[in-house]
Image (tube, rainbow, N blue to C red):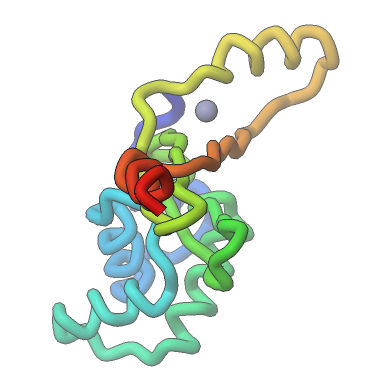
Amino acid sequence: MRDTGSYSEILKREGLKNTKHRNAILKVIENSDQPIDAEQIFFELKKKDIAINLSSVYRILESLVSKNLLIKSNISGANKALYELNCLKHTHYLICSRCKKMFSVEGCPLEEYEKKLAAETEFEITGHKLEIYGLCKDCKQNNIAD
Ligand SMILES: [Zn+2]
Ligand SMILES: [Zn+2]
């Protein structure tokens, strides 16, 4: 497990103002059980009657990515960037290359490897990404039926 401070503390530490919009966006991402794209975030904010435009959502997302608060991933095969919190949860996903569903994986297989690598290379490792691709159970069954 990594730093599990609340994001308002992280914002403060990064010198970012704890603005209403920024907070609302982080909350939407935190409440989402999987990485979420900017339009979905925009839609969730709208549901909460938060007045913001899509370009502001993108701008705030980019500033949070540049501060390493969010991880931005471009899933291959989908032309949308997905955002997830960097500090609060560390999750890996199995991604179905047919239906694009994502399934979170318990735990991280790379923690020990990171430590070993850091010791060997004197690298200060700040994170990693790991995505595992394949066919989900449903798609696999449909595949056989074809
Ligand atoms: Zn599938
Ligand atoms: Zn990991």
